[in-house]
Image (cartoon, rainbow over all chains, first blue to last red; front, side):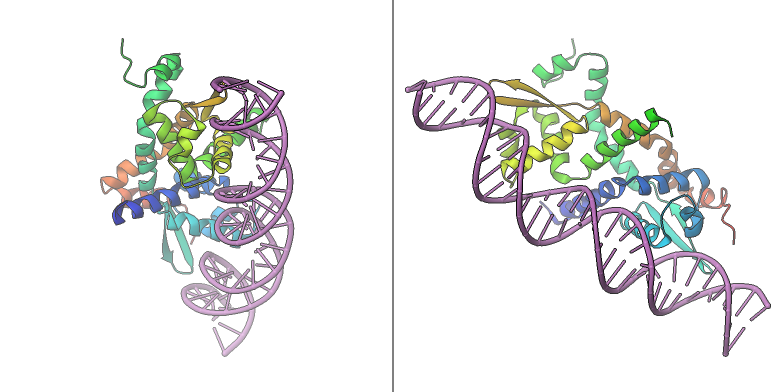
Length: 118
Length: 118
DNA sequence: TTGACTGGTAGGGAAACGCCTACCTATTGT
DNA sequence: ACAATAGGTAGGCGTTTCCCTACCAGTCAA
């Protein structure tokens, strides 16, 4: 394991861990659908005290999924989708599996881990 | 929230939670690259006791990401990628964000949908 | 049938998570 | 200067996660 590899693995871990919580996924959805917003506007959508949401925002920030920009006494959070592109890259090698399984060819692939084009 | 919606949300939660752990992601990779395998063959790749891996397999099973098939005293685990397709569906609405940001158009998007009250 | 082998379950413990209240700093308006 | 507003931090507390050892059940071979 190289140093760069370990760093990337840690980043991957932070992104997947950030996405593991429904509140945080909902924050991402709100930022995607409504654009950049201050903390209070986000907090209005949750049955949760503001400090708890602040901690969720911290997790998202450290995963690189949101960025904050100060504007007066407000902090405007905006979506940073780049780490999600890496999640899609992570998914890509699995794609042929779900496509084949949806076509009912899973059994074939289970027996032939090689490419089973007939 | 409908009953079906709640069920889907719970399923989504289980999948994201299952992916939040590096060991479980590695199990998926092994099943993808090497095909179906018994538990011991998987366990050989981890610095971890077998019961711990069994618990990881249980989490993956309950998320629908692996299936087991008994063969004598062995249990052959195989990848079930369908839930990953749902993760890709979840990612899809974010795609334009990372594409736009990669093209340097993030600033434009940051200003346009801005309904943040000052 | 006995013994070895595969793998799941039970239970415990340390650490992380996710929530809370209380408190702090920084900024803005009067 | 003072009060109000925005939002982060500290610390506590119950729950969950993730590992362990010990144990149990099913299967195969001698």
